[in-house]
Amino acid sequence: MSTSNSKICLTGAMGGLGSRVLHHLLHTLSVPASSLTISTQNPSPSPPASGVEARHGDFLKPATLSGAFAGASTLLLVSYPSIAHALRVTAHKNAIDAAVRAGVTHIVYTSLAFAGDSKAAVMQAHIETEGYLKRTCAGREGMHYTIIREGIYCESWALYLGFFDPGKTVGNGERRVARVPQGADRGVAWVGRDELGEGTARILLRKEDFVDRTVLLSGGAGVSLRGIAEMISGIMGWHGEEAVEVEELGRERWVDAMVELKTGKKEDAETREFMEKWYTTYPAIEKGELDVVDPLLERLLGRKLESMDESLRKQLKDVGGARESIGQYAK
Image (cartoon, rainbow, N blue to C red; front, side, top):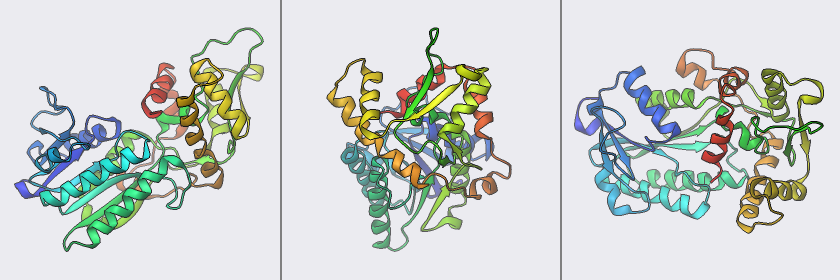
């Protein structure tokens, strides 16, 4: 890892997943800082890690990327932080093309844990990017990929549980209700973001074992949305009529309810568009796309993964974490 042509370039290193990858490369796996570079849209005068070079690289300004990736043999391409399909695909293609120009020989792409033929809107840009990456590598000798379908973050549960806010004050006679359109009883193999970061870091260092492969990093067990509500009720000490109920509303009623929840109004075109797209997540959940448990992450880490109950207990010490997750992922 000490020579310039064996550097790993990380994108997304300021974000939730990428920052954990960087942390584990440096502090868990003892990778020298000189063997890493960071490509970031806004390099800070204070780098995120001492000794790691941060370079300006903007996915939407392709001319900045070749220099950002220069000297790296491996690129960690963390997916662009937006669910806007065209924007995300353009960003990813720009990065892949720039990696080719810069002489990168292995791209590790962070995809999502839905099925490869999923109809979930949030997965469509990933599917298109996966295809483009495979075709790009297939047409170039010595160019390889690894696609990591990263599991659904434990920390993002509120986004899936109808934007439920456990910190909301409930008046006398008012019920605690989480509203979803469907799929409340099908499991999701939730997994902690930090564990995904460590697993991704370990794959980067063992990329020869994952050449031209698509792998899944999942949690150790499936927990349904109704199960999440029951866990929250138990942790918060809400029993009987105080417990969180989960209602399945169907598509139209759920979209209407979420528009009003998020805006306080009966109608808001931008929010409705987002909710219509987000609805498509739930048929995929009901189909079982996220209820797939793969042992790979536990094998990579060499330990049992943190359970969803354990994760929730940590998160609910500060109920503001639920609001933070909604703000982070719902964009």
